Length: 365
Image 1 (cartoon, helix red, strand yellow):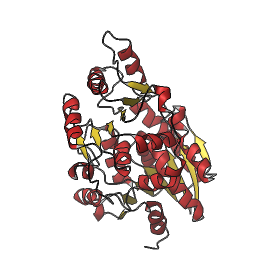
Image 2 (cartoon, helix red, strand yellow):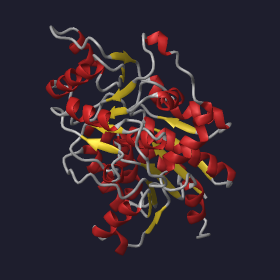
Image 3 (cartoon, one colour):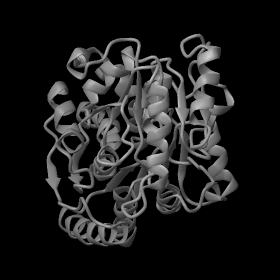
């Protein structure tokens, strides 16, 4: 069995590492296409960093499609991926999540009539204007193997009648939990004193399209203003991202710059594991960081109107907030106790998702 995996963003590299290890252990041949969507070194080199820890030697073909508009990026990716698929002729392709790279891999594979494996299938925010929602819905409808992280995701696919098609749909849990369990022992210590920071602290990461755009930074500036109010009394570490780098620079050069937030560069996954181990809580609009916070039994304030990880809201672990309500929602959770919450377990499986994928592909279940 020959599989080509299409990756492009940091969360996908994290998910791919335990899956690539399972392929290697099962003698399934895998090659990776790295689209270059995340081009910052600490984000783009994530798979190589993790593969080194696992002694993986998975072949990687590097493309260069970062720093482009969504439409141009998608078209260029499809063209290049299609050429590679025509040359390599894999039995299956594998995509993760909901990025532009995900949809490009799905469309190129579908046109080549190569069956698609979609891991993290069935998630829905029910916001059709969200680029990630568009990507995940279209990819699900193109895929032959739909591996879901929860029963809610299964229900979403059933509601769209995908289960009537000639597809395999299974709840395997969340492969990000596989990654957490696999790499937590390798967490890289960060000297907080280098950032003039002491415990207890919070971490923040904001980079979704609805919160930061290249042409209008009004929403992002409002978020920074709200976070700065929190940071006045509570140490706050803001992890920057290529998408918000320019907006942060403009904010710091403005008449009313954020004075209390500690900004640091993008962090590699092993450094993030250390921060998640030691933080009091998380403020984010990231889908992946929501779950990582949960796996470390830390609550999260999510700056979005809706989230595809609905279980984290319904169980009370995390809370959604509007930009205007960020300080009030933060204080509400503070009164409840950021660390005094009985975090439910096993919302997303047992950390054995990769083996469940292998068993399904081999027809063992």
